[in-house]
Image (cartoon, rainbow over all chains, first blue to last red; front, side, top):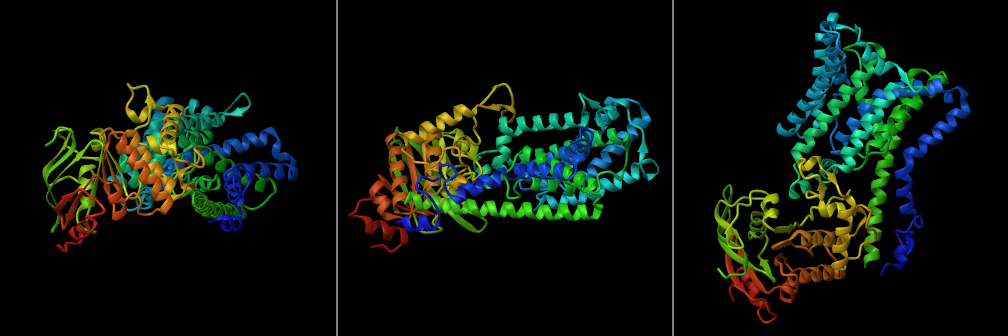
Length: 346
Length: 251
């Protein structure tokens, strides 16, 4: 059996050797897609507007992208386990307010940073614990609730319910200054990415994360502590929001209950544009970073070209839809590859 | 109890609400033997197997491994006791490679003084060991570093069975391992089961396929409505008795 079918399906006999059949080739292309598109995008934009590649502008992009990238990496882990964290933006705002409040009491950079990280982590812990141990059907619900709660808390706690100026020097240095000609916030992004890469790729916990994302039921049967893994993802997402808060508060020299509006959408968009899947267990930290940079590059380019902000929003939205469709296509191709594989086994 | 009894179940009782799923079931499994567990749908086979592999807890009765009572409160505890189970849904992770699937939940990692989740994985060693087993069992996989999502039903089944063989130290339970497979792929899996037996494991096989039972099983235990209704040595000659025992039409 199969010769005719195989031909009809466009499969070569030595499948899955490299590049010989359209299905394998398609999967390979989709895997490399986001990075490829980013490179093409940068090339096209730099031809269009020569100002784009100037070091000053690139540093600008890096600084503006840093917060999205850091928060998106946390979001990536949550999405990896089939979840979503809608609270990251408000969580970040609350953290900056906490930092500002501590700064008013005492001018201590370690304490201010600690306050922001702790605030972010604590909200993440609440998200994870209520979702997992409260047996909620989907994290959408609790993180939507904490989105509202955190924003409200931030507004209530902030002096005069608005932006509070002032941050310790070390914090503004971290968020706003440069070293070796590169913005310090870029080094924060790299540090977070490296830490999370070690966790997801080298540590047993990371493998369990992929297992829980790939098949939660099988994970239980294999004796993996599924609940602990899930809670930890929200904790890390909260911590990332806290780190993002430090960077943003540092760059602006302020804490504000108005920060991070729609950041949850940016972070989710970054993860999806970067090429991760909503279907669980597929994607890595690099996806979030690539996606965040892509968003940063597109915004920056549209700014340079003088395109209005509302068209930028539309552009990002359209790109998200395209990215999700690419994910759907990838799953279709995988199913087809499986069928072809079964044919070959006959 | 005979000396080489690997698994002994004594007077197992299990209720699910009003349903009395297991009624005083006792059985033994021996090393180097395939025991077929037979019964119609709802006879209690899966319940019994899930109690042995730690998914459900028995209401009453005990489970002995190598003559000692063990408490199998979780799948992990059952595995520690040397019981491996190949579930009907295979419990494979589509997004992981065969080697990653093999070791999922018991990764080879270091250093040992860290909590298990914090340890660093020795990917190369796991890869090598998995490849050795796949080779030993003569399972043919298209690609060793591709996620199992890209593999056929038979290949996936083979991976799940192979995983059980690596870690089985005493008993392997297979829940309808050939249910979703074609002829040739079924054959592969049956060969694997034969190999498990040859390597000295006790094997419990749940299946509806009488041909497979006659061919492979050394002994058959029949359940009906939660009760053990018979135990015999399956042969072509008594295949009919076996079937009537399963459906409850006494010949």
